[in-house]
Length: 319
Ligand code: UDP
Image (cartoon, rainbow, N blue to C red; front, side):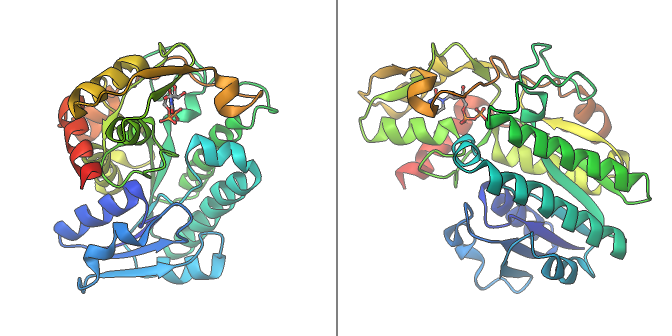
């Protein structure tokens, strides 16, 4: 089997590349190295079943060339991370919509199956937790730049389903706060990376708001396993799946866990949202998946507890 992984030098993408290679696949990774890092794939330099192409998903010609001859495209390339999205919403929307349009058009031309990486962010501020795939999406006003990411990802999903109706084999995965080794150490993509860094360097952990907002952190190997299942199993065709742990935790608790697991002397400091992100900011208060559909249709079952996952992540950061 041969795959193209867009965003293959990124955090989840590079773990996906590793997992596909272990299964005997040939893999091409496309990445523009905006948030992706060469270091994430450096260990594959001598792997003859792997090829890295530095380039952009917005380059339709390149995307077409790389998709031809593949069995599956795992489309993970995107501008992600709250900070990146709100710092440059235009770049985010361009990459996240145009890139997906290119991938889908090329995959449709060549009859190649697509697995789109979407996000739990598409549920927005819905209070209907735990989220089910066909539940409501509640987004705030358009002048809050954060929601441009949810909107772009939702449009990507719409594009997928429109192509499905034209005969393309597609599936969609919605990630819930994936974390683990190779998260951007600056913490752009994940509060876990940021807190671990702060705890290891003895700085205060910056808890936004009152810290009572919740997330369901999902260890990256679980996200990757679900992605491969969604991208290959017949039962996944034409469907969208929540890929997330159902273990919900407040951000304040997460901070305390990380302090305990690192043995750090750091304190918590509470930072108002405006101080962290400026005036126009909003975020989901609770984010929890109902993973029942993924469990039922593709046998998705997260294996790594938050404690274990945090331990492994901390170990990697120490290294
Ligand atoms: N957060 C925090 N301190 C930080 C970074 C993030 O308290 O230094 C909070 C953030 O406000 C959110 C949660 O941690 O409530 C998860 O943030 P992240 O950026 O990891 O992803 P999100 O779930 O918002 O997409």
